[in-house]
Length: 343
Image (cartoon, rainbow, N blue to C red; front, side):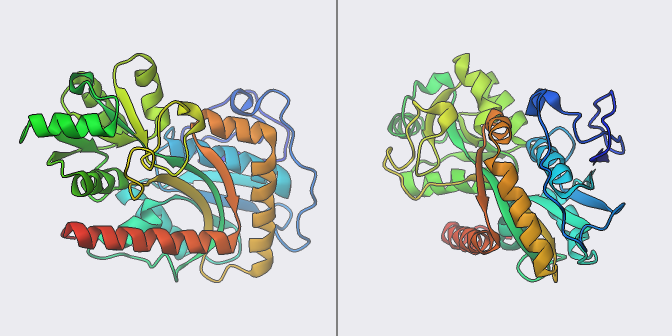
């Protein structure tokens, strides 16, 4: 657990669970001159001396966790209170989401979430301990990170058409990796096969970093991965970037065409991140948190720090996040039905 506070900074930085540090202890990410907003907190929330617990459904050091800590630091300064990051990893983020769904809606237990526990899990899991649409209160969208489709150099692919041609010449020999069955990287890989006619075996991994390692080693042919995970290998020519699974090009890989430019406009997906609370979170708390997130995302140092994670900062208010959740959930429902994938 890590604590971000308006109190004076401490000397050491350690992101291990249950390690406490002050709000200004991340200069490498925010810049040495980072300063918190002096905005005055709501008179009734947060109460002086009360700590906000920001629950993250993934392990320390991963992309979701790092982004959560950046946001926690900004919230701590803007709300003039202490924010503690608590990692509750497990079951693709659903352990943390379930914990928050059962918390008191007083604003002191919040969820920093990625998309799987909100929109994909309800589609691919046989049963869910919570309903993300009724047991959680959406607050604000924070950032998104479209995936890049990458291939091993043996395919000699410079485009999706080249990958399709390679698969046609090697029937029954092509495979793709993902971060696990039922994840967005798996579903996008299956969707690509459905749209292109490529017949490839799915190889699930425990995380996309492991999938990329095997891709570099030549054990798999292609994968849908975050640009942050792939960028150094792309720069080393160890893997080939073919397309960004988004309507627009990625600022970190500006020379890579989009899937729409490549003839597959339906092939869109990646990760996105949001702040939520338990059902029944009061409107005044939602409004204040919306404002704090918007302030954080508008800050140039924050935007640069998020960009270094190869993510695109994008604040959406409660209504925008609600709509995104509905649209994404429906997209995955439709795709899973089309693919006839069992739960």
